[in-house]
Amino acid sequence: MTVTLQRMPQKRTYLMCPPEFYAVDYAINPWMDTSTPVDTELALKQWERLRETLTGLGHTVHVLPAEPGLPDMVYAANGAFTVDGVAYGARFKYAQRTAEAAAHRAYLAARGWTCVPAAETNEGEGDFAYLPEAYGGLILAGYGFRTEPVAHVEAQDVLGRPVVSLHLVDPRFYHLDTALAALDDSTVAYYPAAFSEASQRVLRQLFPDAVRADDADAYAFGLNLVSDGRHVVLNSEATGMAHKVEAAGYTPVLVELSELKKGGGSIKCCVAELR
Ligand code: ARG
Image (tube, rainbow, N blue to C red; front, side):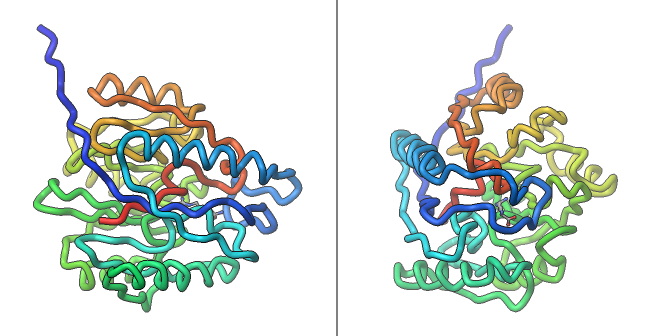
């Protein structure tokens, strides 16, 4: 007997920032190579397709205006982490991105979000994921490369949700969102090898039914996805991952984002969810 799972989509609100000033002028992760030419026009086209894909699925996408001198601002997921109307602000590790936090804070505050600036280094949704239906509302948080573990404590204090810290150990997967994604309110997909042995054990305990990615999926940025609970929007190179999520009952939607891969990011990096 085949059991067909009915995965239910939920209307989402996202924040994106166009790659108008996108460039690879500095290298702060292993994907970035300042000698590789970047086609900003193509990046903008691909970004636009991603935005249209999300609005086409019925979601609301707000656009944060890009600022000159902030080439990584297109990776909007890093600007804050919002849960229940509260935005826990980012505090970037590298000086090149510091000013992005204030831009996000100003944008969100002007639209009614309660913004709490961070005292501790953290890169927003790049290192935080939220699962409203897992264990009553659980935050997963990455550390090892960008976000400091003490920021996990700060996020728990600010957001009033339990935070589980996960240790990232592979520099290619320097943000949690390059190695783990929420497929719906209680299910995750992740790439085990990006995490320490202990954190892999924690993930197995918390999510025995998780979709597990392999090396090829992770290297194609297949974990860096955005899901509405049914439609899983992922990088067009991540075909193996698309099959895995399909087998788990979700509908993969592939979007090409090759230019933004040069900065070390993909779909999820470009999309912050506003909850
Ligand atoms: N170049 C950016 C950085 O290294 C990429 C950020 C990717 N964003 C993400 N959410 N993983 O900071």
